[in-house]
Image 1 (cartoon, rainbow, N blue to C red):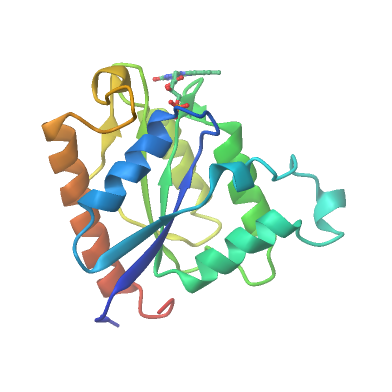
Image 2: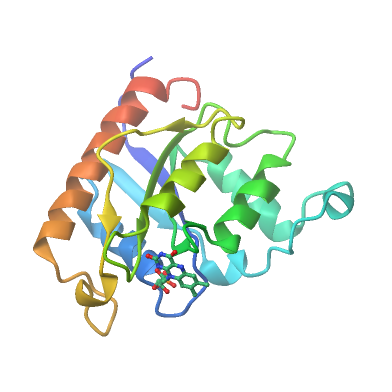
Length: 193
Ligand SMILES: Cc1cc2nc3c(=O)[nH]c(=O)nc-3n(C[C@H](O)[C@H](O)[C@H](O)COP(=O)(O)O)c2cc1C
């Protein structure tokens, strides 16, 4: 069911690096989003407190930082993930985040609109990393936006020293991506909203 009203998105960066291009991409998204969309960046320092995943550990309940992210995802209209490609796959940070959130009895990703992007210093921008993330949302039944895809390639050339996006073409791509995500949320996000 299509919905109206403001859209709230929670964004998660798959990199804990202080000067991360993926976190910088999400910060750029905050200002490139449509007027009716607000993007909250989940604090990377909080994400750094997620333990490595173990079923023994999850049997004891969700660690507090995990529960915090789960609550934010449950309350959000959509989830935006920026994933760095590591060895043609996703980063361990992204995977740890997905594995932990998947253990919540609330199933925060189920039927949740999700958009995936990513920045990489390589010339292709990390497509294998993004596709690895997409695959996780098949069993989790997340509603992943198919297109447009944005691969922030050669990322060292796209941001200034402060982490500000300086490449106009990338800004346009991200703007179109976020506009499509808003449309996707309004189209499929009825249950989550
Ligand atoms: C362990 C490791 C593996 C990497 N593998 C890839 C890769 O397969 N493809 C790619 O394009 N970049 C690869 N990179 C480069 C990352 O894209 C680059 O470090 C990027 O800046 C990481 O994202 P961040 O800036 O958000 O931390 C790799 C980097 C590391 C540390």
